[in-house]
Length: 295
Picture 1: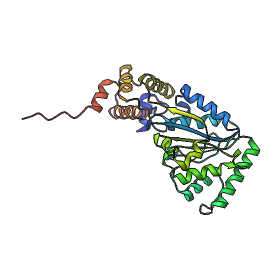
Picture 2 (picture 1 turned 30 degrees about the horizontal axis):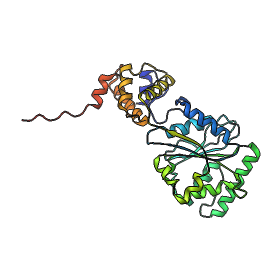
Picture 3 (picture 1 turned 45 degrees about the vertical axis):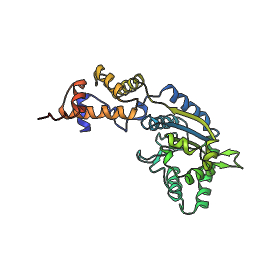
Picture 4 (picture 1 turned 90 degrees about the vertical axis):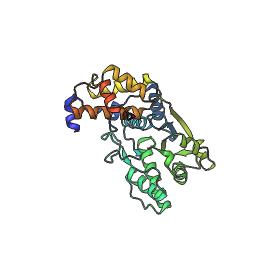
């Protein structure tokens, strides 16, 4: 149905799908500023933090950041996410992808296995000493060759075990904690902020150098996001103006909900081969079941 959908509406891609090209995502001024700060931070390393409620756009912000970092020559970037984003590769001057693996909440053995995959080194997951030694040597070699610290992006970081987060801090530190070997960006919801206040994780909280807080979106911000995606996808007239307004007013400030609503409408319109995606279709698709009449 995807090919039919694209042909029917003259789209380069589905603007409401989860796998929208990162280059098509809207970078707000706050995200632009955060990306700039991380680009400065990769020379020294350390922690950064992105937080927001579910559906506020944290994962999108990480994808925008990864896309921006792809412009940095010979920079090694790894992404830990609950969703597998595709085939592994390394960001350098010839590649514009980053290695990605799922399950950031893994235990220590799985965590080392995933880091080995991300940074392209064979590890013995159950041998922490040797694994940490190999990783640190890999990162030091990268720093000597490129000056930049390797980057690790962690989505849904609130799901990570405390022992894994603490291990990550120790791995990334060198020379009596006076030097960072890694730039680590943690993304999560309010639970991550709460966890970083726990005694065991305070050392990480004290090392956060850059922060991005994503708030609930206003209808205008949601409208800007939708129109930006439609323009990037190649059809600014896909949704009628009144439907755009309706969607943004009923999405409760939640970007993920907005995309799901719009995607459901697009799928329904494609199935019916309707040329116009308007409010009439909206009420048909999302109408409540009528209450049964009393006899």
